[in-house]
Image (cartoon, one colour):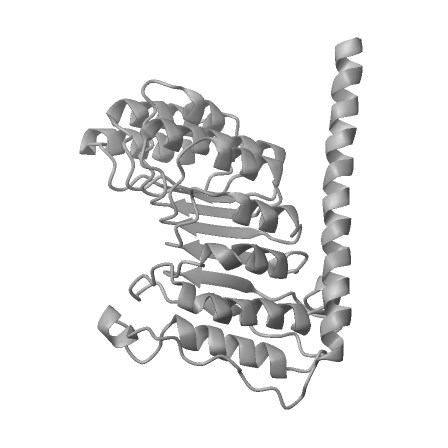
Amino acid sequence: SVSSAARDIEARHDKLKQQCIFLDEKCTALEETLVDDVLRDPDWEYPEPCPGIDFEELGFDDYNPYLDIRDATTDLRHLSLGHLGPNIAIGCVGDPVLINSDEMAPHWKQLAKAIHLRYPMGQIGASGGGDPTRYVSFANVQIPHSVQSDIARALALKNFRKLTLINNHLGGDQRFIRHILANNASLKELVWDRNVIADARFGHLIQEYNVFESIKIERSCRDSAVGMSLLRSILNASLCNTNLTRIDMESNYIETSGDAFLFDYISKNAPLRYLCLKGNRLNDHDALQIAQALKKNCNLIELNLEDNLITNDGYNTIRRAIWAADL
């Protein structure tokens, strides 16, 4: 039919568009490498002065994000190209949040440049072999808006496996995360914590770039409709991606309000092995429906429903369903 042909054309168009974006990023990475390779200096020293920020007054101890960036940049610049390279970790979960500061922008630019230099043609581990860089983590640091595109482009086409973004105030503008997801097919684990998700667009991103094995999104939805919409999108993604076996949606205001989607999903016996819905708004009625659904599921190994609105009666209903399945 005409409508079917139109959908096929649209799908091919979208695929070609993604391929063009990929090639453009590849060419950009190559161009920057060729330019910067001329400037590579084995005696390079970190050029930026310490920012005028009183980290001790902000609550930091011996280490802070400036030192993280400086040390990561120095390590990346000094390693030989045959060396696989370190994880890239800026900030710590237990530290105070470093609010968006333009004084940190030059340091983020140095980190972006070091990533480009360290991994020619955008391929982490291409010359060294072995596993790709294990993770990139930004925790409790806000990347200045002026350099977010620099960091996103630096991380494009890098074969890192895990991306952790914690408390970065990235939820409102999704261009940063979209750029990274669109250009890293090797990314298998996503951790997204305390970055506000305000609407359904984030769930659409997950479905669009559905290459994950593990997704952990915590304390990011502040509305039950958004939380349920996001859960629906991620569970749907797992139906199309059998490698996605771990989903953690802790504390996202998830409330079914009578919607049977969660229970229908569990009944389908999807390949999911771990599901965490801790700290949400599920109740005893939900527990009864989950108990019935679990009787049809032999793949789910761990289900975490702690700190919901479920009473002991609800939890006992689930326990009886699990024990009956084991008999």
